[in-house]
Image 1 (cartoon, rainbow, N blue to C red):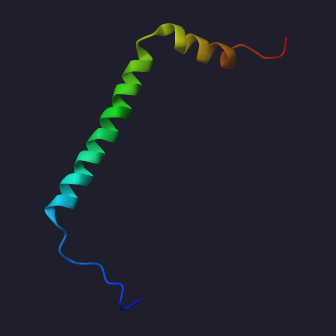
Image 2 (image 1 turned 45 degrees about the vertical axis):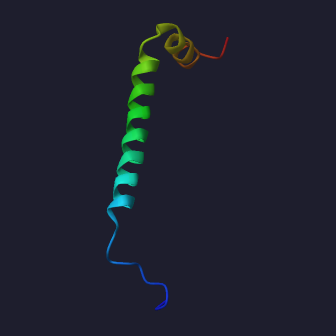
Length: 56
């Protein structure tokens, strides 16, 4: 394990790339969360089978 050493110095490029990726993922999650709240039809279709008893 002595050969496989992690470099102590992290380049700013990797930090910027990971920061951009994290921001994009968070932005997509927030966008999808708000986008699914806009149409009440899809939310009703998803919630109606869960709330209504399947036993008829």
